[in-house]
Length: 102
Image (cartoon, rainbow, N blue to C red; front, side):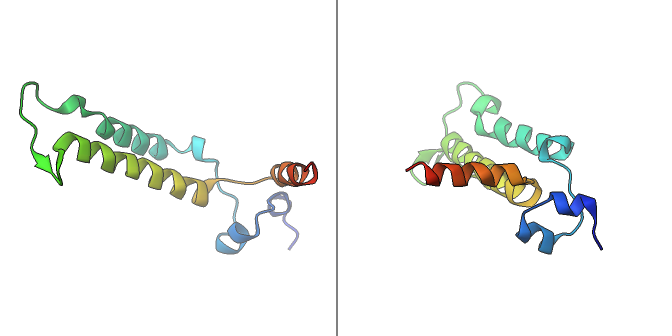
């Protein structure tokens, strides 16, 4: 019942959602692969030179693709932080110190 791994983890929402400890995000290779693909899509290096861009929603097609990739990066980052980020007791201590100083 008193699992030492669980007692180190202080975030109540993640304990209820998933009781076992999870790896930190930087140790998961698939996360890095997704970031590489999204960042690669956000830069229009893959378009042929000299081609006249098509207009989508009043913008050149490469701008729309870049904006969608940027939204994808932001959404994926939010997912990774929410799903895999572990908080420690020390991280909440810093927030309380900031509130007490004003």
